Image (cartoon, rainbow, N blue to C red; front, side, top):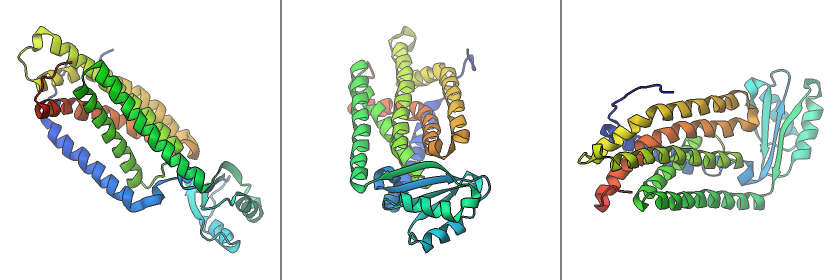
Length: 297
């Protein structure tokens, strides 16, 4: 199935503009990330208690806050969800039982139902932070080894730079949108890295085939890459579109538990498709010039 029979879009013409745009978003995101500090991380990494309730009708967040304040839990963070028919309560300690008693007593007539309940100690949170960082690091190293073995080191290096950019972009967007990074978000980031590198390898394969063909002899590398991306454009859009439909379904109907996970997947799929075209492939040109080597596999 082909959406486009033949296209001649000059992607490489605008690569430097895209470098600037991508770098700007990543830098702004990282600045906000460091400004927010520990607020970037969810209960998984900070430790504490999270209890999510849903109600059959709209609940007043102020009433919940006052009820918790009267019981000595004034430092609790309370957030409305599900269009006002839900609340999310976060505390820094293990206060799950106290929260349940207060909500069940003060709002018994509202029929509160627990949707999610998490309690993690500070030591476990620090350990999970370390393990999450190691997971992302080893994933990037593994991808570098694989792509370097399958192609050449410089091609693998450009792919890893793209994935590093994708990771910074996603983390930055979570900071900009004031969302929390949890273990499920880390899982989504790792999933997206795999999705993104798969799309990149498909493009790399087509570039390799075209470089070996007689029709590409003597042509500038940018022209060969443009031709390769155009040839794969229909396949890329179809794959991304069908995947994003499923992710949007999770984002809309997945509920508060899957909300951030689905957001990370949706953001990553769009970013991964963009970066395979405007980051990974153009970097081959820049790295080939910088290291003064021929763009062969």
